[in-house]
Length: 353
Image (cartoon, rainbow, N blue to C red):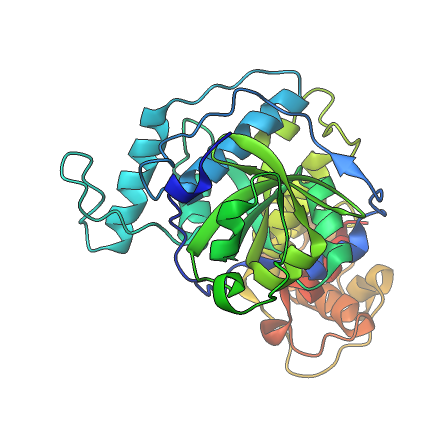
């Protein structure tokens, strides 16, 4: 049995990044998740240095990659050096180039979850990258369960109480409540991977072990939660083990982020020449100054465009703008430049339907 008191933590305080996608705006497009979901174990998980170094944010990412691979019938076995390389890089980015020094132990200050997620997405950890990540409301258990099921687990941050040092099997709020050794953060910040859930609690992967956490503990101590999109799930036949099409999900997440290239490849209501301009206008938020009441199939006629395929650039630009605005108006979007990511996604989906 592991001596939790001797373990390291390493999660910094939550960092706000306005670019982080919000899961609740995407949930309406997902079917219901089951009440019970447990992803398979991938033993041996290993410490990945978190017994001696405050790299829990890195170890949690690698543990998640291991279980993702296991879910697809694959084996992924990262080593300590994979964790070290990533920890040195992220700490350096957070500390003006002064990263963790394994020789002296200097700058072992942990990392923020968002910085690690960004590094995981853009650079990769242990040779693995994620496609995107979304933030999940920790207070909404339905959202938490949906994200855990459809994304294959959760990457979370906890304000650990000292009381958890004496709970080797199940983390729970101690009898004394949120005071004394039960005070949130009295031990420090920690990052872990959630590998499953049911009505009684959640599966915790930390320090190379798989234990349990009650929902009461979750409510009291979890201060940030993210769902990452694994490229491992995009496997033949392009579906995750739970049967959800991750390719479609990847595309929608890119649309939320403002990527328009995918729209161009799907638009079928107008010729190819119009598709490019149509997409560019979406990307550049080009909108007319006054409302345009035009249906898609009558827009060209109203603009006196007799042959879209032979129309010049100016005519196509006017048509694309009217089509975009007409759809936006029907969706209640009065100003595209001020539209929320969810509103833009709804517009994009209506255009490619």
